[in-house]
Image (cartoon, rainbow, N blue to C red; front, side, top):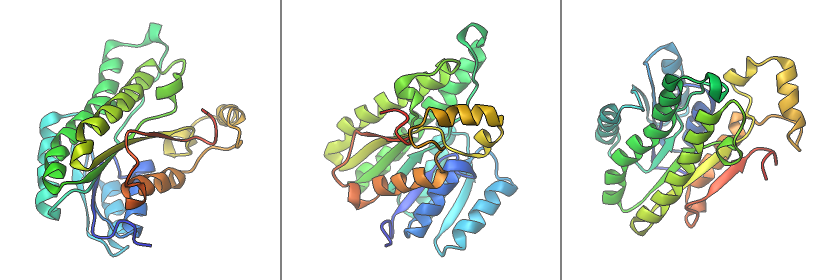
Length: 248
């Protein structure tokens, strides 16, 4: 359908997992794709090749999303290379799960830096470009645990809850500039990370999900396509749960 034809998307943490599937889904809809990860390695280069094979302009960039300066740099490079940025997907994120009594200050700080500060960094850098363009779509990857909380994930849950508050604030702040801001809250999604979990743990999660299965990264990507496209032209400040009714 080419829902994103001639649009330029910047996606953080997109060499693999959900970010990669969003990048591929955008490319299939005609978008040009710039994506980041910490290192330019074989994984990034393979993703870049897959995107290019879809017939769109695409490039991977090594960048630390938790660094304000590095985020400014990569946004400047993308804008120079692609000419504009229409879509920003703040997808970079990590986990450092532990009970609060065992959690170190370091594990708290790194989650806040990678998961939450990165959203501020990239949005701060991209807003100047989107304001000049008189439009844009910002999509932030939150989580169902950012709404409901989860034992052993106080740092992760807090970072994802912060993303929701940030998303809603930016929607109100930049709405008059025709810039939309929304969040996606995935539930239990089958990725390389969750695939490493013991089978009994996975089954335990699935029992909590009314649809009785984990989600696919491609199913999250479909929502990201909708939010990036003109189909969502009057959707802003929202949190869309992709969780099989796990949290509703």
